[in-house]
Image 1 (cartoon, rainbow, N blue to C red):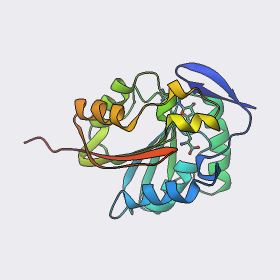
Image 2 (tube, rainbow, N blue to C red):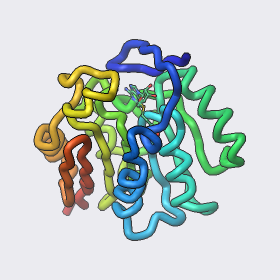
Image 3 (cartoon, helix red, strand yellow):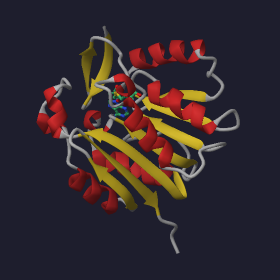
Length: 201
Ligand SMILES: C[S@@+](CC[C@H](N)C(=O)[O-])C[C@H]1O[C@@H](n2cnc3c(N)ncnc32)[C@H](O)[C@@H]1O
C-alpha cells in the first residue's frame, strides 16, 4: 500500500505499478516518448508525476550519462519509494527527485529541453497552472510530451471517466499557455501530444 496524490488529496494505491507494464501498453508508450525527440542524449528533462519512477528511469536511459532527469511529485511516500528504486538501479546521479506540485515548480525559467507526463495529467489539481509552469521552465523550442489515458480507460483504471480529459480539451488548454501542438495521436485508450514552446520574436 502507498500514497499518491490525486487532485490534491491522498489516494491509496495498492501496488505502485508502472504505466509501462499496465495492460500491455508499455511498448507503445515507450515508443511514443522516444520518438518525440530526434535525440534525447545529454538533454535536461523534467518528468512530472514520479509515480512508480518507471518513466523517470526510462528517461534516464534516453538522456544517457551526460543528461539529467528531474522528477517531481508532491507525495513524500512516492518519492521515498522512488529513491529506493532509483538507487537500486544505480541512477541516483542521473535522476533528481523533487517534492513539488506541477502547478508550482521550484525550478528555473527556461531550464529544460523537454517535459514528459506519462499518465499523470488526470491527477493534477489545476491544469492551466501546470501548463503555465511547463511553459515557464521549458527552453525556447523545448518540447512538452504527454501520454494520457482516455475516458474509455476507466473500464480498467481505478478512476472515474470524468477524471480524464479529451485530446481536444488538452489541445485548447496548451495553446492558451503558449505551447503549440505539433503532433498528436488518438487511440482508443490513450492519446499522445507533442507541444512546443515557440521562441518569442
Ligand atoms: C499514475 S502516477 C504517474 C505514473 C508515472 N509517470 C510512472 O512512471 O509510474 C501519477 C503521479 O502524479 C502525482 N501527482 C499528483 N498530483 C500531482 C501534482 N499536482 N503535481 C505533480 N505530480 C502529482 C501522484 O502523486 C502520482 O505519483
